[in-house]
Image (cartoon, rainbow, N blue to C red):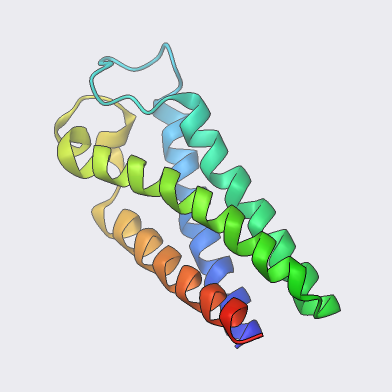
Length: 131
């Protein structure tokens, strides 16, 4: 299950990097035509930072099998998931109809990134509760 979790996490990270690159290419603060759906830069950068830190904690667990890393990973993942949920609901609500960078986000990439994130959360939660 640990290897499956890492694999799903890496796929999710790939979709996330793709979306971040799209945002950076056309959505940097000051370059967007509209401020209605602009994602705050702190939100855009904290989500992946928490996700990567959580992944690092999970990898530390895989290498050391120390249970504390699982709980740290789960806590960081909860924060990253919350920020991701905020961004996805803002995007689903009005981001696809705006003229900002979020408009260019492919629907499938956003949905797959979110669904894979939910799967990661479930796998990490199962690992944490079965220790």
